[in-house]
Amino acid sequence: EVQLLESGGGLVQPGGSLRLSCAASGFTFSSYAMSWVRQAPGKGLEWVSAISGSGGSTYYADSVKGRFTISRDNSKNTLYVQMNSLRAEDTAVYYCAKAPRAMVRGGINNYYYYYMDVWGKGTTVTVSS
Amino acid sequence: DIQMTQSPSSLSASVGDRVTITCRASQSISSYLNWYQQKPGKAPKLLIYAASSLQSGVPSRFSGSGSGTDFTLTISSLQPEDFAIYYCQQSYSTLIFTFGPGTKVDIK
Image 1 (tube, helix red, strand yellow):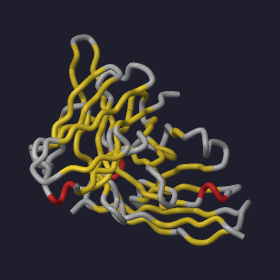
Image 2 (cartoon, rainbow over the protein chains, first blue to last red):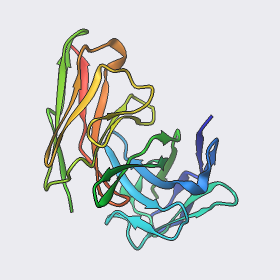
Image 3 (cartoon, chains in turn green, orange):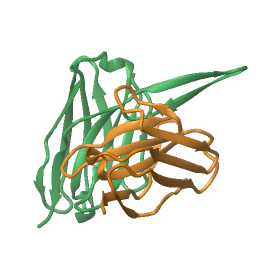
Image 4 (tube, helix red, strand yellow):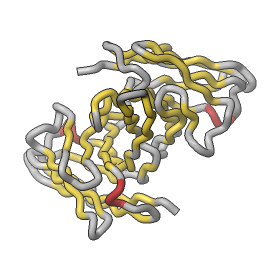
């Protein structure tokens, strides 16, 4: 069974740091991009960051760029996000998600459609003094 | 940056109703559009990817359509388990995503 399990959430003071982990099982972890998505209390979904299967390419939302760092250890089947300079507005449930791509052949070019097909249950981060 | 809007923000419907939710992108995103369902206290669930491809295991009463800037999620006959919040998500640029604000579907 494909599973993702987040950990590392908790209460942290503004300006503090936290590292979240996401343990993956049931699939070839290194073959898939992965992503972090968060949801503030009572709010909608916000994409945070993504990383390619090899870990060589990383992507960030503007709201976290320069403060968060996504990484992965394919030998441990684990995804991470290091969160620094935390703010009250970073308070949220943080989900990790598996991000496969579907390929559609289109003549000369191939088109790749990314989506998030498996999600963890989330871990809660609260930034407050 | 690509912005996503959804309409309506909420709707009330009865079991058996046909429900349509619209998502609009601020620029053309071809078919790079996904739909998710989220129930209270739960993680989102993928319904549709690439605008119209039904995710494995998702009931066929769910369908997606559209391309460019305008997209639609349709539930052909609303079931009790379908009351939830629905989000669209664009994936036009590689591994850069934006979610819509969500549409809450509740019981009339």
